[in-house]
Length: 60
Image 1 (cartoon, rainbow, N blue to C red):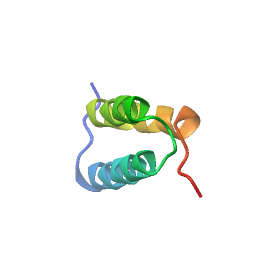
Image 2 (tube, rainbow, N blue to C red):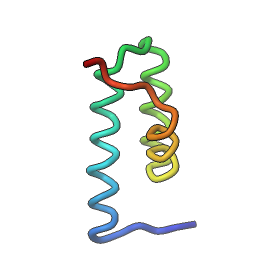
Image 3 (spheres, rainbow, N blue to C red):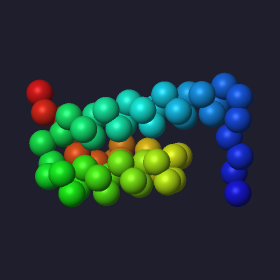
Image 4 (cartoon, helix red, strand yellow):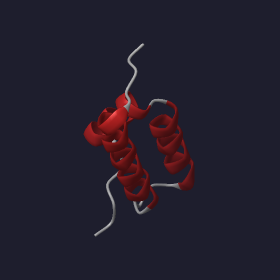
């Protein structure tokens, strides 16, 4: 298990918060948003990477 603490943990927290805000602003359905948010919250590093690659994009 990878333990992230200190400045790395803080940076990951900021990135996860950014991902969650972006997910909430996306044009995806509510169910898909909930699933993406759960993924990012339950698996912070892996969830963020998966969201970055395949997640819903915010409406512009």
